[in-house]
Figure (cartoon, rainbow, N blue to C red):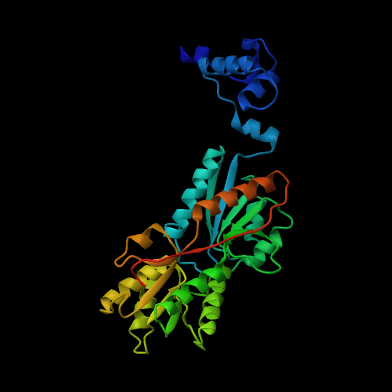
Length: 337
């Protein structure tokens, strides 16, 4: 019986409503100028007769897919997983923003083994735009593709001469704030834990260096280029503290994940935090407030960042220019310092 009531297409619904197919299309899409009374009557008829517009056909007409590609390139960190707390936090905010706009999210984790990996994604036609989470070591690729593909934005650091649109925090300032805080807490032998290959991490390292130089701590920090992948950096950090070399009294960690694994390594070595060694993380992920001791860190506003990414992307989908945005980080002081 339900099939007898079902309207199969816009033409049948238009005939039933006594209006044109164009009027039905405008009523169901919420676009165009028709009276609210007519719009509500057509929507009610569509509901009564179990009619759902053919999304594929609509997309062919509008040249829109209703989807956004979110891409995580792992050029320098091939062992990293989407389950990483940083990715999960950012993906959650992006999914919420896109859902509220009526868009779907297509997620891809990419190992960039060829120079055309991004070209293949933007030319696939699967989505209306592309958000890249993290520049990794692929900043040149982003710069190369962005001039010919406008609806492309990236979460990451901004640098002079950059061609692609990026949203992110002031990583230099964040690194500077972290190191300065350790100096103010009495640290004089400071290490930086993180691989400075990606733009964001190298900027944090440079900020750290600048703050230590200003404090007269020449030749610091000592760099331990640990990976971001949890299972890899845990063993690397433990090996560092087992090396027998003079130990630092302060650590600037390039991410909260690195900082948390540092805390665990120190616990196994019976090195107390913050009494013997102080640690500052980076990101202020939810895990930062759940460690023992709770982690001092540099906060990036991921909710605002996701909102900026979406706003910039949709402006570009509409054919408008959008400039890169550099947000100010914030020092969150907790028990690890």
